Image (cartoon, rainbow over all chains, first blue to last red; front, side, top):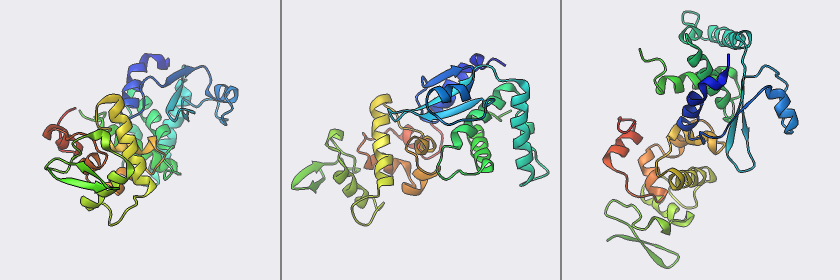
Length: 139
Length: 117
């Protein structure tokens, strides 16, 4: 999937989280980009990475091409973590469009930057709360 | 017109306690406003509170808008509910940050009652 098609979605999400909408950069490979910029990152398929710039602003680095497999693997992770809390509801089912999947991945990356979110389940919860607040699940 | 005294100088407030001249703002004034609003018992304020207020002022300066409370914390590297923990009423935070009195429409939005989308 070419994430550039969703540039406006990412700009919207940045603004909705009080981040500067223009602080987005598309790259081929986030791990390589990070290595070139002296940032630690080993996940070569990582779709999003929020970095702190020297100006104090955050910038979201976005993998330009996210494979179906890489995306589904991450959504499956959400599904497995969710089963630890509630086996009757799989929140992954709510991510029924590419737009929602990307929004979830974007927001969970952002959530991981909070100092009190050290656990992927907390990041999932925060991301879903935000998606709910932003109207992603309104029918 | 009500005033508060800060280091020997008088600072004007409007009838609802907003700074008449937002440019008067500094951390000492914010602290006195926070005491008046019952947010703290005694100065100084914690660095967490000051961080939130400074971000709000910077955001307002850049965008002439109030930052979404949930969005503030990540920007200032604080826990995800920092605004609600430090300033349970965001409209009071706005006042302590020395920003101009918001419209009723904006206050409703700040309090989660709808308003500008």
